Amino acid sequence: MTLSERLPHYAKLMRLDKPIGTLLLLWPTLWAQWLASGGRPDWLILAIFVVGVVLMRSAGCVINDYADREFDPHVARTRERPLAAGRVSPREALLLAAGLSFAAFLLILPLNRLVLGLSVVALFLAASYPFTKRFFAIPQAYLGIAFGFGIPMSYAALQGAVPVEAWILLAANVCWAVAYDTQYAMVDREDDLKIGIQTSAITFGRLDLVAIAACYAATLGLLAWVGQRADLGFAYHAGLAVAAAIAAYHMWLIRRREPKQCFRAFLHNTWFGAAVFCGIALDYLVR
View (tube, one colour):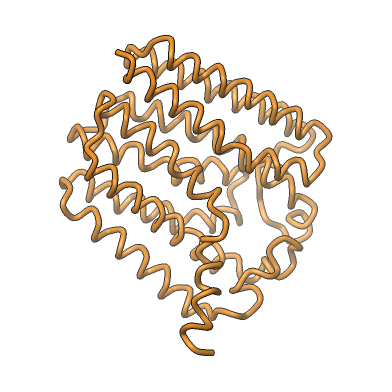
């Protein structure tokens, strides 16, 4: 197979055809970029982080498929992924993940030492997350830390420090990630039970809907706390109200635990993140 024939398989391995993961990683980074800069982001730093999000999400997908290469062929939704189907070799996947990670590291070299130090933690989180499904009862919480690590890195880049506000925002992202990724895990629950993978959907069992609702409530509560600390006003809280309505819609979609509706709710979470971001951006804009 020539390189030109392999490129589409590499693109699918990186999930470039499925942008939802990039968006779910991008929104909390944008929240932090606006909050850390008081609504006046440094456009060069913003561009670095946006490109970095795309690169690291792609690298994370490649590492995830490498870690799950023995499991994915047994799951209906994942058996046609390039690595599971044998269209890309494990060695190619590792080289691709390394190249993407190195490119992301090169991007942040102009930034301060704190950002560089935090990037090492971010890389470890992204690389280790896929393996947590073997022993951690709620790997989605670990995913939330990995997906949200652009938050402390954004504060470090813009303020040279990581204040308490950043960690509260990261905690909010962890709760949100558990909510949306449990919806995602509900799609594969039967297959995951057969092959022995740990997910929050399995751990929560019959309390899955209660747990998701509680995670949404915790997310909104923590975001409200961030808004209070940042002295945000009506526009921000209106954004949170819209996000709450979106969360309620997701609960309605998944009420019967139908896989298609659970996946639909998962995809729709980008609007939750967008609502929060619009609230932040508008609040600073109208000041």
